[in-house]
Image (cartoon, rainbow, N blue to C red; front, side, top):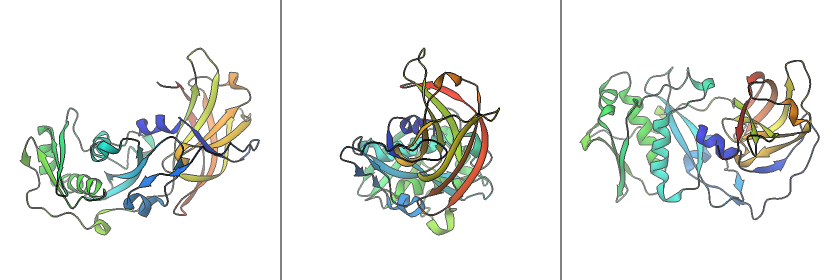
Length: 291
């Protein structure tokens, strides 16, 4: 997810006001709808638009901790059309690193396990992993989740009709048929606030924006940033690229420092109508663009 977070901070979309001064962002230049898989649209609604080039939206099916064998879809984006399936499987291997999901989504792929190759022939995708994956596939507690996560992640892409999962050339699940999606996939929960990040242009420069990062594209009806002593951080607030963050352009950036505690009050609704609200205190992480 951290790779995605860096992408989210790259651009600003439409403006909105929520406890801050309303400001309309300039219209995007030749905005186009992101190309999305049917799985993305099924779980997260219509894909957002972008003016930053041709982009692709898909889902990663992460294993669910509370229901062994089941998986949960999460949205991801890439500009790399040529390697869509490889990118998706590599992101699956990376796991969900955000602390708010640590107890919900276990990491199945052992440290050091690599994706050796991804090939496709006549609709059959073959993914070959390192030998470290063999015990995971063989275990009763993890084998079903591993099979479902890899298979469904690859099957969502157009033209894919089957998936083989190998470990250094040997079949991990010989003869096994793809799962019925309705029985293997848990519906996404309500949207969550993942993190709050401040961005600078240079290490010595002032903070230029503060970003409240959500786990999916959302419509944001309210987002207020305050310090622990109750002082509101004033400024203009925008939706980010992919509609997955609220971006504050602070009027007094000198008050923001790495490690500061920031309270975020928010109300959001995702593109499938799931609503959520909350007030959370998070530690501000300051990053430099291109970090």
